Length: 306
Picture 1 (cartoon, rainbow, N blue to C red):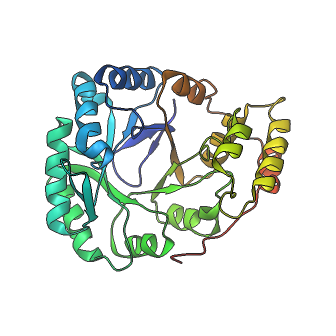
Picture 2: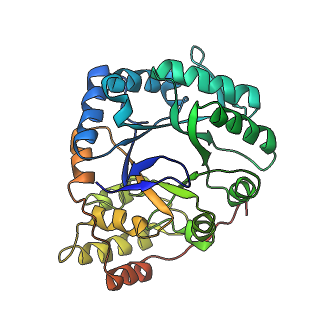
């Protein structure tokens, strides 16, 4: 699987990333899922300290112990949580970020992270203090690259302006094209890579998409009504018989933009990993098909946090 450089860092990630939030808490299942992803050519695992209140990191650490140096490992920080009471609050302070990494490294059983990200963020955060924490961790060799996981353009712009970030994780898919308005071009111009989460739009861009629209989009999705989603699904389905399957269209569309280094998909079964990787090849969408996709969906814009 093709690997892409993260910003100006030494880190290279596979074009598909396994998002680990839905792996569950059974150690054998987590091991099987990670091994299945690695067998498909994926080298990048994405987790966060908050997932299952630290348990996700612990299980991933156990699963990757013999092969840590073959894996690009990302985790996130900012949600100050109590694993016993299952309570948490937002804390982007330097002290919490640095202690958060210490605890993540302990749970993951490693002495460094390839990528460390702020797990959210608001315009009212002590942004310079947060940046200072990440810079110190990078200077000390505890992380190789850092960035922010956010869908807030105003926050992302502040980090682009003030920090030497290498990566931004944001939601991006055929139904959520908000990043195309300005974010993708800005980040690409600044040599900042994008990790695109939600590539299948809650399953609405899969072969079972109509069922997902019925189940999860009773009130629509973003600027789309349920009726519009149904019409779009039918149009997309009519395209895939002669070139690529629907989920492949979804992945190839977001990977088409040069800012996007990897598409991050979640999975809870090996069948989902197989479905989301079996289509993979390094052939881009044809220009004509890409243009067709842009006409079927619409380039909606961010309304909040501009």
